[in-house]
Length: 283
Image (cartoon, rainbow, N blue to C red; front, side):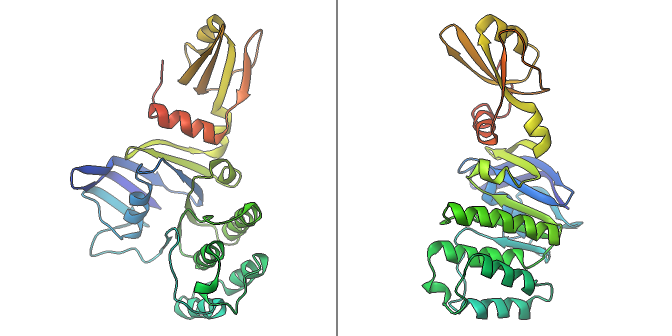
């Protein structure tokens, strides 16, 4: 379990997180979304113990994280994190030697899936393959909490598809909390169980993928019709197009009728609308 209790993290006069509260209690794949500078990296650094809160508490698996209590059951892999310049097979062997929980069978399966050349040294690999080695080492660790920061950097479309399959397989073999920060929103939406959105250091959404799929939609029609239908709904944003109007909704789903059309809203479009309005009703 991860708990943020009224956490503020300041860097001088800048507050990366401000009175931030959140609980991740269940095992699952969590998609962490936010614009650049929203507080995502600070969020992960606080969980891993790399930094400590300026105010409030961060609790991981029942223990408060501070300068004297670093969490031992968290694996945090930052974007483009370098490794020792060893052969891939040596890196895997070292990981197994240092971590009794390391799943060598899973790691070997991943290496074959991504056609990693185990004889190559780390620095001789392409940028994408370096990222994949780091990601495999992380997912095979089987720590209670795994934090992945932009794990598909440098991946082509095929590699990204295979990564999401690998991520799902890893979770199915060893259910735990996996937090993935990414800008490829609609891709991770296919495998994420829950979505966490941060903007301006504040939590704007924490919900299951199923609930979001039901509540995120847009309605369109004549201005009068859309205004009448959306009057009692949580409207994130609107657009006027001549005599017609589009309203972006995050609320109880309504059915299409008469001159009102109802369409699903992608997770990426929902994120954009939430970020634009800070998660608040716009009308």
